[in-house]
Length: 114
Length: 215
Image (tube, rainbow over the protein chains, first blue to last red):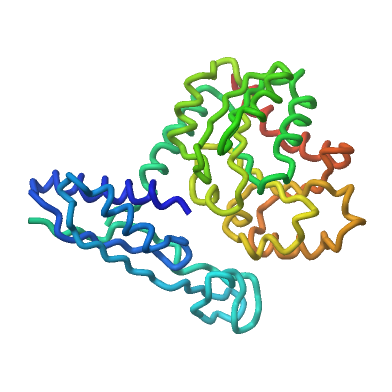
């Protein structure tokens, strides 16, 4: 995917919030990236460490949570957890009329500062 | 809690406002490499150029090949080289649009990078999202790349002149695509023979007329 640009955005969000709160240093950045975003953790971590050098985020711990993909079937009403490749079919009744409840969210949840 | 893609979304909204103010209809054209994006653009230009003024923004990993092809037809064309990037972003469109005289443009076609994955996540400020799937790629693509099919306003099924050479099943494709995206307009056509192209042209003309009449 395009982790360099994404990591840049994450860092900007962290630095922006640190500055707003007059923090000297960011200790922890918590990112939430749904299973369906395709975000590759190792790649995100690599760029994070690289881009953080010389900034208030240098040395911060990066945690990445991956909420699963969950769909709700409009046909049978059942909510199911699905694999990334089977997002738009209900695993119970095979109907394609499913609504995606989670799995695509991608945000900076919180940062810890000092 | 702050969305990681928000910067792009905000810029896309600004682009949409700019295009709205300048009364430009903007198509974000997406497809895999080789589906026929450039042929589709050239045929659309030929059919519409007498009635509307057209410009093209070309996104590519490298080279100016496509922009040169468009320019050879006397149409303003800006090439964005993403330098390996897998999709266009709203800020790139903002920059490229600065090189066009938008007061003189009715119809702007943005050719996205050939890719069915990443462009689905990055809106550009477009009015219409058009996806091309070509027959040789197979009718199973919607289930492999659902997000891009779900997010499109028009699905062009190109290279229908090759249907007989393949196992491509148009009904199966339409069934799956319409269950993913009930509002999508599906247009089977061939950029090579011109079969079916009129349907696309009249669809987009309806929308262009609204813009031109307002100006």
